Length: 501
Image 1 (cartoon, rainbow, N blue to C red):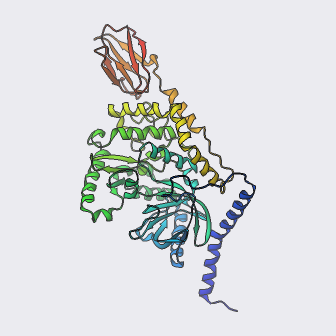
Image 2 (cartoon, helix red, strand yellow):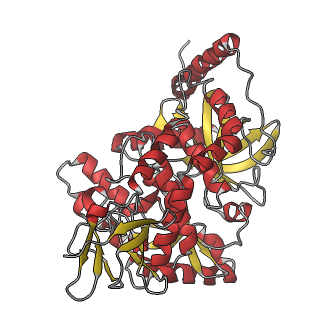
Image 3 (tube, rainbow, N blue to C red):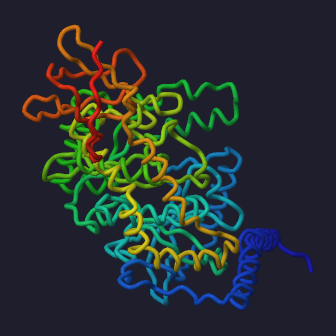
């Protein structure tokens, strides 16, 4: 029997769908069955108190033939370009299903690099339509856990939330797509008011720097190795923009807050005011110290940074996410932590727009940051993390190993990072210079800041860390001192003999 052209196209489409989703799904199912048979571990279960988030659940996305074709066409173009470029027309209608309950959604492919488009493991951005939410999520992403280094991202997010730092809710589910088993996915909240309100904050705008120019330049650089995109002022040309701007237009109060937030972010970008007038410095110091503990500096690259405008005190507060980019072995700093030698000198290529250190110009930030650095690297704090999150971590490890069979989470890794930081939180007397030409003066050539007791009614002065350029920060001391009491903020005081020449 001779097939009609339409029938041939339908068969071809079914064949592509079979290769892209069904075969990986069958293979994944066989692996799951074998692991279940031969594993003695009890299967993961919903942790206590997590009912508001779909951890470990089976969920399914369904789209019609036209939508599937559109998604596939977009993917093929991205694979050809080596970059996924997003457009407003990328969204397609669909249905989300969990335990028989259905939600009308729209979805598109998600990601920038094509690791999000691997065969049988596409990443999706999903938005629930109407007034409904899915487990109190309005917009969220579904992506392979490998894109964020499996448990590294999850663990970091839990610590951030417990320490009062804004971040996206993040956990693991099993995803089906049009009946095909795609395996285990990371489900991550997007930047909506639900994120802010779920963590006890008042609704306010969330902003970022527009990164379209960056990805256009990267796309050109992939096709032409001589294209000098790294030398282009892409950060300088990037404009602040708000998430969900169309919704802000319908809320006069939020639109007014957006105008204030955008002005603050513009002021911060161009250094037109001190960071103390723009940011909640105590909160931001906590953010930087936790990022240092986890070596999560990928989250500080300018196009990964997100800012919540807190309307009560009219300050910006960073929202931390995208801390690990699949391969966490890449070091973004040369020193053991962000404040080491300050002023951007610890950063590879010395680019301030990559990981900003302007906060260290403020004594309030520097002092608080080092206090948190001591606290978060202490054995007491690290032990408390195991007590608070150890069981949940083990549950997710068991869950992930049903697909990633040989994965092991190195539980001692964080202790190693903390020890590396603690070893650098010391004062070297050899890097203190004393002179007495115009009264007793001390200069700090240590790569860490020092609080110095001047001998004048117990007054302490903060000397900045030495950045390797010019003369170090200095303080005048009482001429009567034979010893000077010094300490790193958050550390113990030590007495150092004064050398006179």
